[in-house]
Image (cartoon, rainbow, N blue to C red; front, side, top):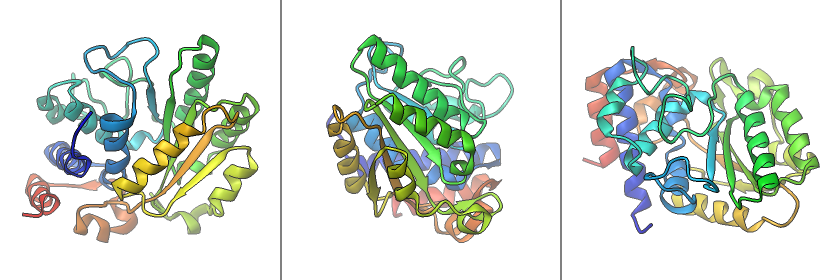
Length: 274
């Protein structure tokens, strides 16, 4: 698919601001930090077809970091899975777009997630099933750095390595912040790359996870690892709230915060460079 990924990132960020601003509150920081990854996956690297969202053998994404649901929705809408107008129904009665992803409600969502750690285990199961079916799919999954404090993450990591799931590519949104403060202060997960390597994973550390070229290079390197017998974890060093300075300045306070429509509109102008 031939497109300008940097412009797609802006579109995704603007639509995140629009839907959360319309609702009035949301997990804005950790949604904005994922725009580059989602743009690269859905517009350049995943084998998917919005016209056949359940097509056998398609690549799949499991967003275990459930708070980032609005970022995934914005991406799916831009990719053509559903009308952008639906974004304005985020987390409201009767919506197809609940706060956390639900595969039974939203076209294009491959796994229901939200309880931290559980989505990652599901992704490992999907990858194992894909291996058994020999359908050729690559399974992608996103976890948070705060989420990485969950024991379930490491149980699943151990299992994936034991089963040689080299069709599984994980991404850690390593923005260094969680709801109660910095990850380092709450329950430090560093040295993160060493931990994943010790659990038998191939590890790729991306210095700037909000640089679209670096992210795409890492995704392609991870895909080339297929055949090694190792799953891959891509550590994305990102900025929570990336793209909107006042949100970045909130620090851990941007985990879940009020956003007015006026603030959203101003943020969209900032994202567009207007």
